[in-house]
Length: 178
Image 1: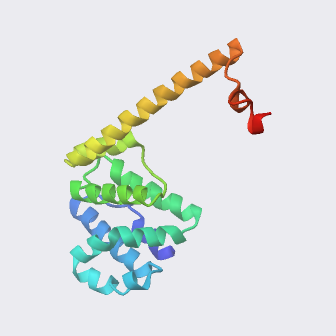
Image 2: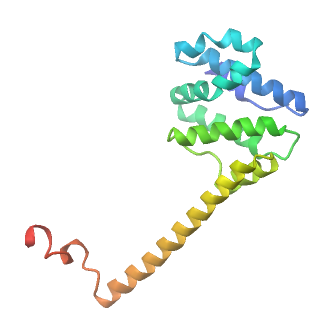
Image 3: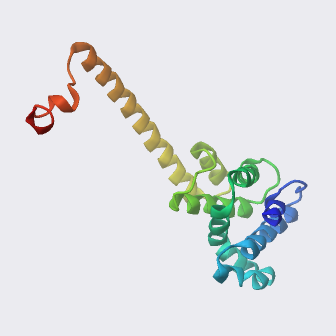
């Protein structure tokens, strides 16, 4: 875990090439530290072939993420969030790689680390317009659900005040016809 903490640490990165180097080193270290043997054997090859490290990044990240304790997950999360949301000279390709990681983690039902509005903004600024649209649609859906829930709550409180809304006992005479 110590090696992974060093790998995801982004302190001291300033120039564009620093960010590319950080991402590649992080990808290779994930492959070296993964508990999945079939991924771990690829780590030495991935040092030489950046495309291999990139292609296996999401799987290696997930396998390592699942074995991390809460403190390490929080530390990793804060570093990745910093890279994605920073206004510094982080190249769009690095941000896009991390956006794809966040999407992958969402599909695996792992925690979403960054707010949807932030993801939308980063995707748009990184010229990943399909991702930006996807996040805008999610924002819209969440806003609609929120509005619908507020409407239902206000209707429900009105029914309670007027004596309506008998709940499950008001449907069919209750459970078992009681």
